[in-house]
Image (cartoon, rainbow, N blue to C red; front, side):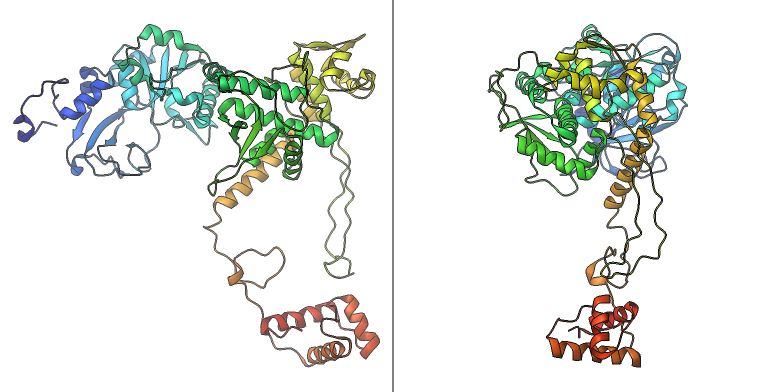
Length: 608
């Protein structure tokens, strides 16, 4: 697009680069501030849309507003456009917009379409065309996504098809997102999903953690280069990917948060978790501390972490009912408390885990009713590899039961009985955690001390034999050692106990409940008679207004006579009431007849 006569008639400015063909002066300065070579922008085809009608639609809808337009170049030759509006509005959904319903595509600068398919060299994966162009301006091989999640589909189940156009097996890819990856759990999740998917295709995955901006804010790859960063410095920031890398760097840079997490880990090991309820609460506490390490924030009482209760129950391998009991137990212990003040509707709740640290990062004693002094010898690392285990499932012998409010036996078919399923349980899981933190080997007494057990021989007699039989650990004298393939053996034991199926069922139930909750306004309420467990709104409930038969009218008159004799409300609308009518008036109505009469009275507002 050529500049207009009005633009050419402007007086030349004395600051910033001169305007390029197709770009306004302001946009030239904007791209220069993002460390993008003018030739790179020109080859991409970036231009200024001075009027709304200059914005290409590409078969879909884009806001017709003035702004900076970036052509996105897919490896198969498709080109579509994304708009960075000059005036996105007070509350824009996104700074960048692409045609509505357009599928996600990987962006590769046109100058690199052949080079990036050649094996060898590191490829950097980032988000946004400006960051791609900033890397291309320095000779880096760049793969761009429109957003951190947009290289995946089906919520991280698979890569989008564009990845098939790139060499993956044996090639190196470094995920280079903005520096807020250290604090933003959504960016962390996106990076973790992408890394796992790339590794599954045989790629060697790295992560490049950019430092925060000089003012403490977040910065992307373009900001890093604009601030004086070099390719050599960027290469030094890359390291092999693992989910714990982000957590470690985050804690290293925040002294107060690291001290608080250390204090929480000491509290976790110093607490005495008693009984089934205590060990269930132990796993809930562990998952809360792990979440605090990933995205927790300093709070006057410790660390505040946002965590939805549904996923928390799934991760801790407990039911929703047990989760509530465990959270109440943690509050009674002083380990933490729920903090939902000011929580917005449809948003996850928050928890505050009590950990006392000074403003200078110095550790102080933890608060709480069960505070312990002297934690020498207590493990302090909670990077545990063992899966959370489930309790054994008890046997279930169903009973047919009776109809609510009556003594009549239900006629429906009773559920099938199920036998007891033996599982390793959470106590054995705690033993594995102790051994894992101890480096794979510990004495019986050390395990007993870590779990606050008085007699080590009880663990030897009750808990260790099953783990030995499963090949998870070995006991020689007083020494307990994890086997080389203990993680694989543990998964086999979990599968034999039906834990895999139970987890999948729990996840399915949670997904169904979540979808139903979020779609609650899209469901039309049914109009039906009011009854327990009915769906719909109260104002939409309707009652039948059928007239009573002659026999039902006689029964109703007998009921009214009964209440005139024995007082208002003396008649019980159940089998017991029918029996009283028989003794008083020699009349014994069926329960169905009483229900019809009661429904009629409710509908006509004449109930006694």
